[in-house]
Image: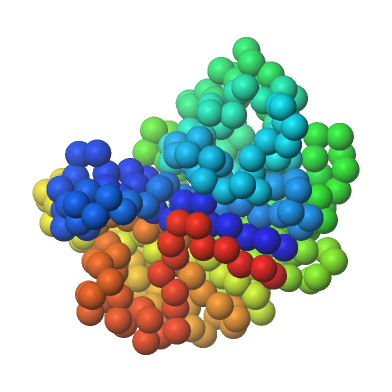
Length: 302
Ligand code: MLT
Ligand code: MN
Ligand code: ZN
């Protein structure tokens, strides 16, 4: 299975348009930013599955020749899997509206409902070619298939992770709004655990990560009150947003090395996170723990 990190930043990207924190200021000066959270995987190098659909998808697809159209018109995107219904993970669906055929979109039940209602992307897209909505069943490992039902060579299991509905739907009735994925190449057995958002390292996360060749994990915030330093005391904490901080006591840095994944890479990193600065003490601590800070365009073969 080939894995490409198309975008390694959390919502807003780096630099974020209205942010002048040190990371955003540096990214502007160096002209070296990070695009928003999105990963592409493929078992055959021809048909790709997007893990989330970022608002930066147009430039992300243009940046990787593997994802360029074959022939005059033709998509290399066989399916999309959404792990949550947040704007940074779903807006990119709108950018795929030129598709000539319906796009299979796997999503947890709660997210599928939101995309027909509170954030009606599916409804809007139905005026174009539309999507084929497929609800991710949390109880089963399923073979992923393209629109015709042809297997893509990858099995997928989803597990709910500790979070809550997106801010635009705080009052939504209880349902699964966030999952982590475990994707397995049917031929090589290579396994990817993809958990870009998690409020805790709990049994579902342990089950997804254990023995995985690669774990891509939530690196959104270093500390709980990080947003408050730039946005003021009204800003939500990391935990209120459903992100376990990396560096605080009890944070993910202490726990990730014990989850039994062969390699761990942080993704969905917010622009305020001090570990983005290569010379920071926070970066040094992460690297000393054997954990990699994800970058746009990082590739893996599993
Ligand atoms: C999140 O991952 O917590 C959300 O994408 C935050 C947001 O940008 O609204
Ligand atoms: Mn997000
Ligand atoms: Zn910033």
